Length: 332
Image (tube, rainbow, N blue to C red):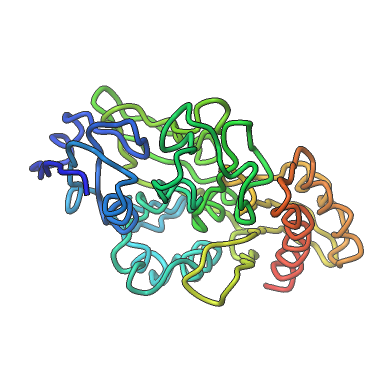
């Protein structure tokens, strides 16, 4: 492990003033909160900061389900949010995504902010024995493109990176039109979660829109009468403690056997949580049965590209959409 100093600021303002960064391997100073992902990467020498700034105990951990929106402090743990009675009853998609993530031990420690900022599970990124990884070492190449890429993205990729985003929660929150409250040294701003993660392009090591010193302070989800009629489908290699091969979040407004409105997001297939507006638009007015949903789900493949071993994801993500929409439609 690379040696580093650990700063424990007295409050969040002091932490922000230190100008640390999050989610970039070229940062000399980084933030750490729950540490469930960070510690593994430190141990494996994937991340080599000279300084860490601890956010433990400094971030808001309140969960407020108000009349207009749900506000989740970034310091809340995954377990606390999943177990919150109003989250479970009024925003079941969030609870489902969280309970399908990690293990109880990790959920008890990992923060909501950290979950949204977790790094890819690409083995070429996480194993420093591989020299080619543009996320870890910009300009070195992408070994996954011609290598073992079964777990990798088919949407939003570039010639520089095809690593898939790992968060289940982010997929649910993007479908729910969530926004992030960002605090920094000069300002506080609000960013739509759908715009928070950056496509890799030619700079895959820059993963979010966060500037130096900025932290996620809270997640806000607008209240919606349709949030209860939702479903999260996760396809994975084993039943627990496994990341998604493909996942789909669906939120519906239904009138009889017709879909009036739909919001669909995908995980495991994109370089960021992936919303599919073409599918959403085509589902409006469609019958709520598989024969009608299937051709609409095929629109999700627009812009997709397989790299050999992950070609199957293009078909599988369509099937996941059908299952998620059917399941959400069956809920009242």
